[in-house]
Length: 199
Image 1 (cartoon, helix red, strand yellow):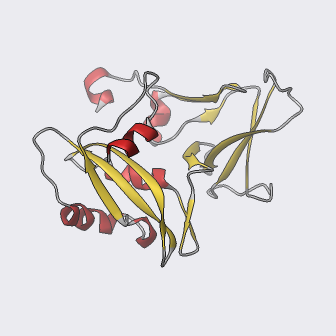
Image 2 (image 1 turned 30 degrees about the vertical axis):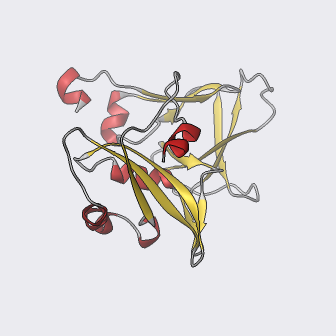
């Protein structure tokens, strides 16, 4: 939509406070895949590791660890970002959420951001946030908080019916809470405490 209305002006930039800028996704990269954070920039090393610090293959989700020549911690040390993601066969990187956001549902590693990226495509939804909650049968399940676009109406059953063909079984949320507004702080980050207080 941005490309159609404004042209090739959109960039996606990823970095951390400890390491600075790490990847850039150009308009060309975003046309390749609009979810990519791009390719690493010069002077950056990125590896993706599992919970035992073993390096993972392309397409496998793990934690991003970083080395840069300009890091405040020193270029000889690998820095844990706390972000989960993967690299595809063409060298593009993708984020899958935060390591502390991941849940295990019926033995499956489940990432809330993956459900968020599908739900937000519903034409009646303005915003969405997904968290993990406890579940007696599966250990954990997902719960979605959704904000409807102005003037739109949507039921739980209608949304689940729309969602089922698009996601794996373990991504189907146990609960969906319809809220008037999903709150953010002055920096544009989700205000989780305010969201949960208002429910």
